[in-house]
Image 1 (cartoon, rainbow, N blue to C red):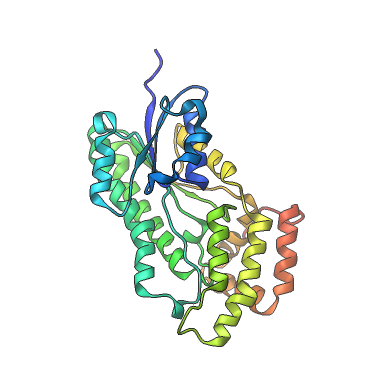
Image 2 (cartoon, one colour):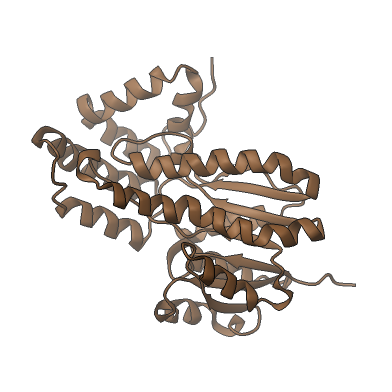
Length: 312
């Protein structure tokens, strides 16, 4: 007897990774999933609906959900048959780059409201049902910046570090209820969202920032970041495929990085537990050896550098 499809609730599906993931799950040839693809603004639903094709209204439904609003979360769950969510994918997020002095506290708080508290709000809403049924899977779209800080991404990295600590802690408790947690950690993902973020940052004023720091941001960081996305960026489709595998796994991993090209950069942190090696090399590559950085990114893109670096 075939098992009933699992209900999958995904936040942030108006574009990019969320849209691609929703469509891939809804088009699963074994029809294992009933996808509730959500977004804050339903006026942006047309692209998702077009991509869903014949799955729309069958294995995929579109719903309004603002992860920063308790009432919106409650309304969304009330429209799910039985109110039960088998798989929750916390994908909604927002980015922020720039010199710290030029960012307001309110802007920083808004990043945490979406990236961290938005995810926590959804988990609090679905957790009672998962505990009652003694089954469930919570998937969190984190980032390699939840494991490794990147200059001029201080606040965004902090919000992802917060997710990593919160959900690793929660995972220990939830094993008792047969509920799995998976933190998916992409590197750069080439989306319109990322392109617009960097474009806006390139013309932003960042009041209160000293000219030297502003020069570093515009003349060194932004060009390097654009090249990083060109050289190492994954497509939303490839990252979504990795998440589909995590959701379908018999024993889901706690953590799953999606981009093997990013492994050498992550390995710098593991080689020296004190953290000094990563900070010093990252500093020198950006501020003292920018040509070496550009050359290294080109090598990573073409695969002439090894994907794995082993600790001594």
